[in-house]
Image (cartoon, rainbow, N blue to C red; front, side, top):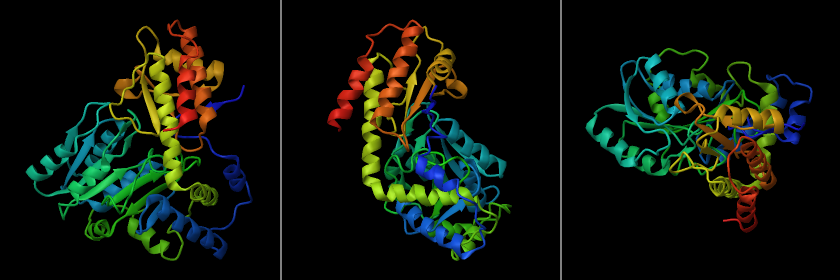
Length: 379
């Protein structure tokens, strides 16, 4: 049985990238590898849409989240954290671990934070040093209006805006420089079409000035070390060599397709998925869904765990379930990275068959028909 991966990380890896990573490994302290790193750094700036350096860590996205916290804050400083899902809550946990004073902005899971609430807190609470927020909250599929929040935070000269774009960069628009984003974080196993193991941080000049003053402890995640090494297309510690070789190929594919075309492709795939599940009588969780994944409420009378289990074991289709308070209540269909139109048709077809077998009543084929209509006409 062929396995099909529809989780929001890891995501499918193109064959061309797998073949690049299968080549004999090379030593990282060589001109050959520095040349690869130079190419990668240039294309990362294109992807992040920034003129600032983009640093590469050998870690999951959480490592880059921790690096952002430990490099821009000092003990006791205030951090405004938008908590609208598991990964917003993770930012709060990391900040607390480093002794920051977390000011939470709690948002109902499935809802998007209102930018004016961020502005209200920044105006009322003095000396907030950073705002931590997710562009796409992976646990709920919600998209945040980062552009509007960027305009707001930019008015506060001593406050940084830190974005978790791990499951959104390369799938939805994220314009680092134009939107006044100070730190943008991403990971390799999402829209970059690589296995897990790399994380990235784009860092503004405003953020670098803060990093020079930060007094929190760090060693491996000391971004000043990475910045200094990156000027010579090098790394302070042993990098994930094969992943970076794969990254060069991944970024070349992204550059070839063009970021605007990629974002449009994701928009169409997301619209087809959302239209299909609605045609099946299912309800979306997110009031403002992102184009990287679709979070769907499990219909009444259906066991959510049994649904995802059946999809995986009988059809080889791996959807993600809900996390924490949403466990068993939703399933998540990813469509970021290496996905095309027929992938969506496969996902909806498997979903229809599994739901039908579990006793859910609907017109078989209605979801596929709805998806095809969107895919044929586009948006």
